[in-house]
Length: 138
Length: 138
DNA sequence: TCATAATTGCAACATTGATGCATTAAATAT
DNA sequence: ATATTTAATGCATCAATGTTGCAATTATGA
Image (cartoon, rainbow over all chains, first blue to last red; front, top):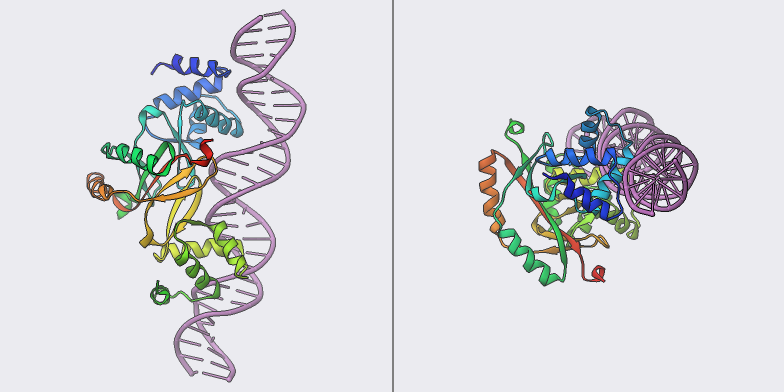
């Protein structure tokens, strides 16, 4: 992942590359699944970066608006991921763990059709399967 | 819709048929799409039923646990619907309106496959398309 | 280096929802 | 019809997540 692409994009929008922002981009790039504001805060703390809670929220808003990351609200909590890593999720109703799953591209076709039918400009979609993971079935 | 079926089910679980509970079931039965706790509270008020906020939450939990209704969290807010009325949604990022959409049953097949592969006991799924409705595209 | 305005921290607030406890009321038994 | 049992309710409080106004700080271009 080349951070410079993101940096360039951000600078073009009048944004600045701050310590916190660059650390967040670094973390998000390494993250293979979803990350919540709390997860992000924990990871930043481990790197001795201690931003205020509101800064985190504003930062996640900013990066979402600039298409660096994508927001996906699951069970009432906002999660974020890099756009290249789009996928769907298995959400455990027992332990709240989230597993990503691949799914055939059948959905993409239907999406276009639905958009047309409803005169909707679809930006994004989210598909979650809720149930109980192997451990929590016991 | 025959309310007696729900009433019987509830009584069998040791539940009681109270004024509030029966009004909620009546409202949910007429509701063709999703309803939030706030929507429900408004509708009850129009019927001169003014339950406490916590009662609404407890009631929605109760009915969900007893499979009278199904919960679906969209953009951080819990929505509820009757199980027979399961469908997917177009969520407008502009005005927050929600439109239901039908989708082919292709998803059901994949769901079974995914459950098997991941040893997950899938209870439910939710599929939302996010974007901008016709009005909000202007 | 300086000026500008983006970013940050802080405090306060908003929304949605959960919980402990005393009171009320639905359903059952008498 | 009345008493008993315990589910349901209201109230107050709390919790989690996220938002906002404002003053202080800092990244960036000139």
